[in-house]
Amino acid sequence: MIARLATFLLLVLLALPTHLHAQSREVHPGELELTVTLANGAATRYTQEMVLITIHGVYRRHITRETLEQPDLDGFNWTQLGPDTWYETLENGKRVKNFKRVMALYPDRPGALTIGPFTHRLTLIDEGDDWFDHAIESAPITVDVEPAPLLPEGEWWFPVRRLQVSDDWSNAPDQLKPGEGVLRVIRIEAVGATPEMIPPMPELVSPSAMIFPHPEKRFVELSPEGPVTYAFWRWTVRPTDTASTILEPIRVAYFDTRARAQRTVTIGAQRVAYDDSVAEIAAIAPPGTPVRLAALPMAAASLLGFGAGLALLLSGRRYAGFAAALRNGPLDPLARQARRAARRGDAAGLRRAAVALLRRDGPDPGRQAALAALDQALFAPGGGGIDLRALAARVVRRSP
Image 1 (tube, rainbow, N blue to C red):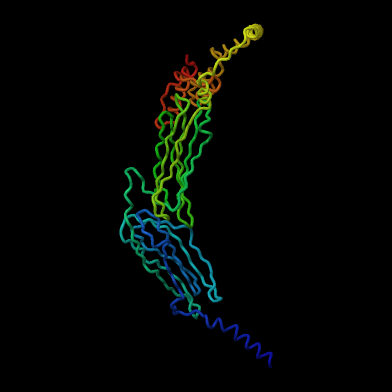
Image 2 (cartoon, rainbow, N blue to C red; image 1 turned 30 degrees about the vertical axis):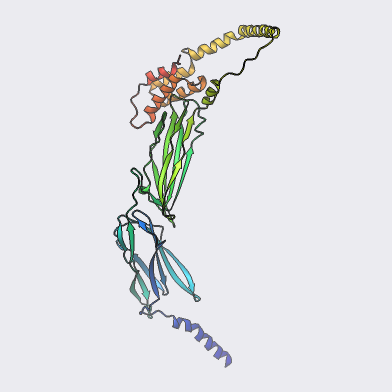
């Protein structure tokens, strides 16, 4: 008898929670909630500045289907930061469903702009396990937007949460080989900005360098903090008729939306030079005080040097003379390579031969000028139409 009673009470206890929490067609206050919140809602907003919003739903009933409808968002450009998220939390020991969507809004005009209600259309279950539709809405929110601050003429309005700028080179810019160029890449990483908000690629300025800009590249990734846009500004730089040149500083101005302050990132001036320029500077240094040598040791040393030089001349003049004739005459292999490339119309091959000649024979103003003209035709926008044979003749001929 006692065992039967205990079994009956256990069945009642097991059935009691189901009875107390059974679904019904009547939706009680507090069972379904949908809210929209602004990140840092107290700050003054400017046009084009990111407004981060979170749509959060809390559901204390079973849901079979759902669809979230967003308002028109008039006055805003927007992007959704990733897919919708569903997760569970515990309230008084009970599991509660949660919904979250994060969006980045960008006001495109000043004034009082309204974020209309978001509507979550749900399908619920009643006490008879029948489905029925029910909708809940978030409260509208008004955002006060100010015009962008006045900036100096030519400066770009660029509001971001965080900005990182790096300056990279393909090789050491102040240790170039004769005729060699260097690739410069400035990388922009802007959190809270979309690609069209990045400033235009600046003009790289130098008094004497040859600068060839490459097409700009931009792409965007999504993060919980907002869109993260990457931009790459690229140039190929080569000194011209001088062994050294200076690239002027680059400045990127932006508005820090967290500190609420205008800031500037400055990349300092950069020297671009050939390696041989250091030796050339050392060569023109003023000579030291001459040293007087005793007459007898000096005469002996001169006699010894004359004898050694005569021996070397007699034994090696044939080979040294042949090597010099080979370099300066029509049989020079690099000169033949340059002429052959010009006859074939191979501008890249001609450039390789020109660089090889400069590396072998050292800096030469005429050859460097010819290489500069070739680079202009190869890399500069609208370049082309150059006479390769005439250019090869300039490359082969050494300056007096």
